[in-house]
Length: 311
Image (cartoon, rainbow, N blue to C red):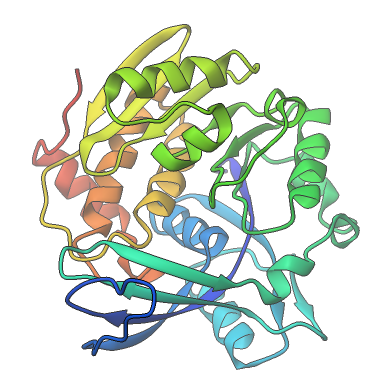
């Protein structure tokens, strides 16, 4: 049997408009293509991990509406265990409004809806599943009190927690000290450490500041530059595969999903990170969030072509 991965997090419906550039405050622009896609950081990561062959259970809260029902059907289609996805009779499903420019960069506004109502009391039935998991993967589109509760349940049973601290928000050191691995991008690393991440040198400083809080493995993702890994007091840098970005919306989520799958399969962190970088690179070549996540055969093909770098 495959090791069990539990993803706890958000589920949204993304409403995406392609435009020549991102609007500045007060500006109205005429965009191009409109798309409505399944999204939410938790759901994106769950789907990415499932497509890459992980045994995935997703815990989330959705609204009793068409968006929630569509999301649930999509999770089941991807082979994700949805036994712990809760339907909220009061709050609507989460929605994200996304603008993507000609270079694939994006800006996003999220209305959390039912995601914001996922509270510790919702986990009574899922507690044993969490305690028996090989890995827990979480983000910050659900209440911090819920993130803290899950971390305490997991670490109390010696289950490793991988935290993708996105979107950026402050977290106290006691919480971070219980996390096995943290995977911030430049903005999130600055929020957690106060160190502005602009290059590999500043990324290493931020990584060491995070490790000093008691985190075993720190990975700072650097977008098109790649990722920096701090493990056993040594930094390693992995360059991102070169590709033409179309839409970067869920690249970080695909990275996280691929990372936990690789770890669950017994890969070392220095093997798992280039695996995850390649998956993220494939995702930016497609539009959408969950729809851009690559399948394992696509990733294996890209890796076989030798499209990874590290130094």
